[in-house]
Image (cartoon, rainbow, N blue to C red; front, side, top):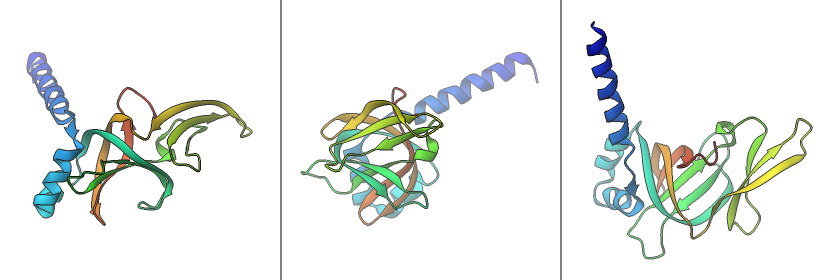
Length: 159
C-alpha cells in the first residue's frame, strides 16, 4: 500500500470517529427509545454515544453494573420519557482517584488520595441543574432508563 493511500485511509477513519462523537440531545435519544425501543437498542448496541443534557440527579453506588458506579441522570421533570443514566465508574479514573457524592446528592466531586488514603485534592465534577456533555458506551435500556457505562465528561473531567 502506498503511503498516500494509507494516509487517506487514516483521514477517513478520523472523519468517521468525529462524526460519531457529535453530541445528541438527551431528549432526542429519549424520543428514539420512546417511539421504538427495539430499533433504538439495535442502533446503539455496542456504540459510544455522546449526549448532552441537564443533570437532574446524582447517586452514589448505582448497582446497574457489576462494579458500583456513580449515576448521573440527564432529564427534566417535563420529560419527554426515558431518562439517560450515565454511569461513572471509579475503575475508569486515574490511580488514587474517586468520585464522591455527598449525602444530599446535589453534586459529584472528583477526589484524589495519596498512597496512604488521605484526600489530597478535591474538585467539583458535576452539579444538579448543570448542562453537561457526556460520552459513554450504551449498556442497555433498563427499567425506563437509557443506561450508558464507562462515561466521561467532555473537556477532560473525571478522567
